[in-house]
Image (cartoon, rainbow, N blue to C red):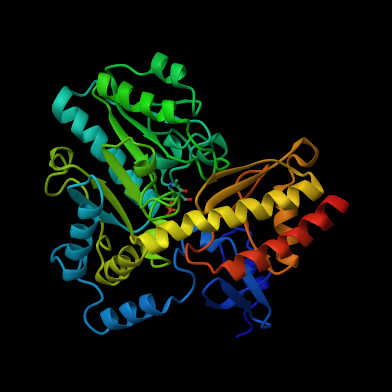
Length: 401
Ligand SMILES: Cc1ncc(COP(=O)(O)O)c(C=O)c1O
């Protein structure tokens, strides 16, 4: 069969518009397409390939588990899921874990749990969910409605109700809106899709205090920021604020689809037998891989490495900016970084991405004004420097066009 980009248009639902190249092989932070052209990967499968492509330890783990047992369903438990849950609880504030297959599903579980907890404990009136404009929490109808971007949530008929939004980093707006009817506040500890926006420390602390005052649960969506990406295992650890519920996906499986919702025993007990579930949640293949990812990422070597590599990125991007004057700011944390286009180049992030691809560099955008970088956490310094020099050529061409 002749597999080309044209086949996509022929057989795929048109909700995506992928690039023309089709990668067929990956190793570390390099990818090769069908023609054998090599790319440096600063995109990491949108903050997923946390240990790069085909990390030997993950390949070995997946192979070994594939010869033991693939799938059992939740009618039976399995060893990898229990080991992974134990390690996640040891490494975080959480005492209980629920497994899912995608970020949206973990968030769906978190939102349903928050509603159920409030209904059980305080009554049906306590059902308001507050989230933030430009947030992103997934594409199920509940999560996309909680995400604060009408472009994604409108046009599908009546939405789930009792969901309100305020601006990120606007504590007084939250203070005005929150009340004893609020059951949860959901936020990303760094807004990823919304433009790589970090919260101010006082804002996060203020959100926690307002949740406590009104008996509302604080849900941190760490689908993008979690599993070492910011240089802490989870971003909350660097903010000095502990959520009540945390969701994690993307990097958790290093490329194998798996997600989890973490919480305390006190909250978890409200998802009683039969209240929620998923056929594949806690699948042994995914859990075996995620356990290995966690073992490797949750080490000083990898986490300190993220901080060092952030420095290389920032220095390189600032040097590019000194020459080409196209960014107003380099923001984000660890290896979730955004180069914000200044007024002269506003709205043109895609042009930078396309120019980078032409220089054999994969990167991302986060909205029309931010070029985003979310590479492997173990990308080599050489690959960072080579990728940045390709990015510099892409910038030179874009500003000249
Ligand atoms: C913060 C955040 N939450 C949730 C999601 C949705 O995850 P998934 O696409 O795995 O459902 C994403 C995906 O980009 C995300 O960045």
